[in-house]
Image (tube, rainbow, N blue to C red; front, side):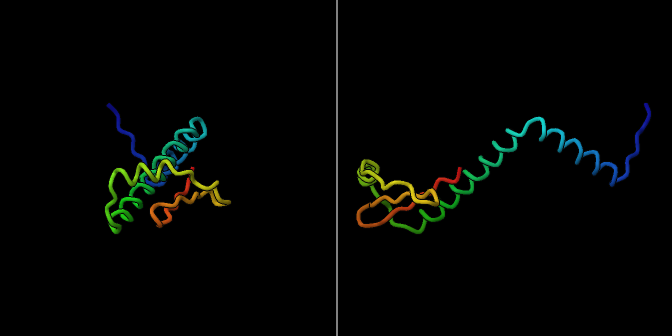
Amino acid sequence: MSSIIIDDQTLKELLKEALIEFLQKRPELLRDVLAEVMEDIGLAQAIREGQNTAAVGKDAVLKALEQPSSPPQADGSTKRAWHGVRVDSKMYL
């Protein structure tokens, strides 16, 4: 069995070419990965913010969800009144 010796620069170029070719053939894969990352970041941020707020009961949540929300703003966010507290949500995708 023979061995192939590749220097670091050649290996880097080969990997770069392979990645570019793969992404050109499967761009939806990159889009899906980025969407998942953005969702995870948003969820983590929501959890951090939720840890600094008072707990709310299930009935209050359901009542707030039943209330109509205002139309989306120019930045994609919506405003929803919740027992005198405005809850902002923003759609990033």
